[in-house]
Image 1 (cartoon, protein in one colour):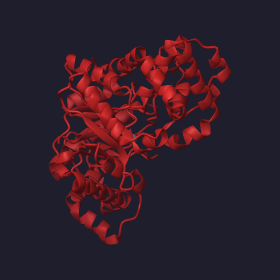
Image 2 (spheres, rainbow, N blue to C red):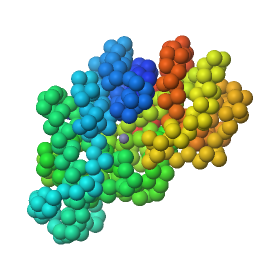
Image 3 (tube, rainbow, N blue to C red):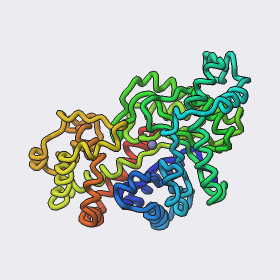
Image 4 (cartoon, protein in one colour):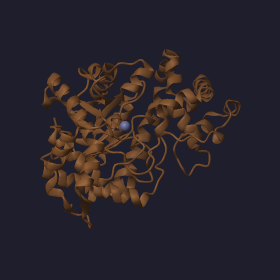
Length: 415
Ligand SMILES: [Zn+2]
């Protein structure tokens, strides 16, 4: 299996919006951009919602059937490792091998020596075609990078081989992720990470580094945009060079996690992938749930009432809900409206506060991030919540499609 040039991680918390999401991908195709949909859901989400990977597979298959989609699509076991992969084996054909937790774990002196030996041709000035200045690589540089990333690369290899044994190496797309850490990986680090992955037999087709800046869930990029542009461009060139140097899959591409809503950097990402004729994978799954709440608020009456209650409960349980997402959210609590205030809002006001339209004076990123992590509250409503989604499927689905197509795809691809 090979993933094509452009792909989007969609998927959603409650496995209800498959068709609405696929509609956005179909609109892109009609506009001339071929995007492969990948329904992703992490073990963490499944645990919080009490759902199963087979639910994601069912959602994807039924959306594809209903809308007559005949191109590729995948189901991503997002952020798995050896301890969590088993329940995903049957339903997934895309696996995100998450090795972030293994960064910095020690390798033996022999392993580090072997890593240095394997990369000794890059000692001195490392020239990567397209990058103006060469990188200075000493044995110490290699030792440092090896000490930091070699263990993680070996762990990726263990997970990859485990899945390949069970499913057959040809039957899934392997992604390697190391995005959920505080410290960004530089382009030169990525070069040697790819070297280590290749040496340990991991034919990654997508790689998700931690980029410079903050990729908070559901809100815009925070950081130095020029620095991001420089590193993103270098990462593209590093990938190009690595594919040739290490015989990695030709279609290897960057994967942008927490990629939804990064509108400030979408145009430059879009321009750079066009400039170098590279592919990209963008994970946007989390925001679909926000669109559900926007749709429910706009539906008014009982649906608006439920949307208000979810905020109220989330507000009261902020620490608990934010805990698992500490590295990927940034909520200024003084900017949050009191639940009593929200009680007085109409559907339009609720929707505008939540919807990510920066020019709208009502838009509140603190409100949006708290709702983002508040899906656990909606999950506790069980069928009361999902029945409401079904009852108001029209207006909810419209928000979902519009969000993915109008705000994400159009901005990224400059349509
Ligand atoms: Zn991620």
